[in-house]
Image (cartoon, rainbow, N blue to C red; front, top):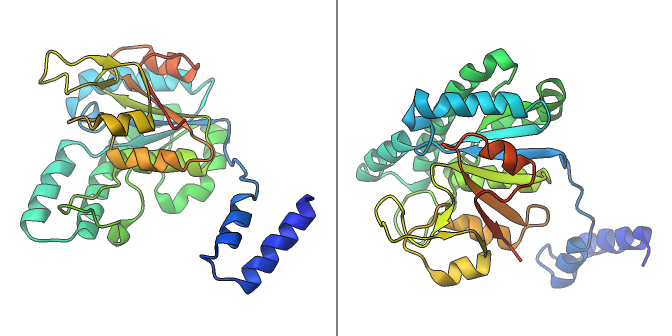
Length: 272
């Protein structure tokens, strides 16, 4: 069937069927998916793993980002970290719902974005909120990098978790969604560990590194501790553009540069 016929079929179905109609869903799934920023890479800078460590951890990362942005276009998302966990604790104890916790957690991720932005201001790197994403192409053309808070913009409309009130989609998921929606070339999580382990390496000396794994394999392992947010794995199952992510150790100089160059320097989690 020609592209024109496909378009006509989809339009006809949209005008005559329910939006949940299976034939309509299949026709829309067959429509081409245009990558908006295929030359850009998304880096998620961990809040607890890097920002909360202060100058000794953050300054080397800032210097490396300033170097690599000469060759790469970067969308740099920030996590919430320890302060977000504290505000989650207070808000949950007050009996506030998940949507409210999302808002207060997003504020902390925004604070980390602002601090990272001030450190990178001399390199011409701006900070943008979700409402200013329409200007991303201009910022990338001018400075090759932009910083944004990693929390997805769900706010009060965050999906309610099956247990508890902690927002299930936090900054890992938010940064990944940016990479997927914009059709970016890389999604790299910059943490304080070498990648995914069989257990938490900070508390279990017997934990071993898993250099590569699929989403289904990781879910089936049902590990007690996972280096990325678990809902991210479900998002990857349905991805069209970003079918793999890499988790690297940002405390080791040079790994960001190597990961952006396509090297396997941490754990690669793939959808296939």
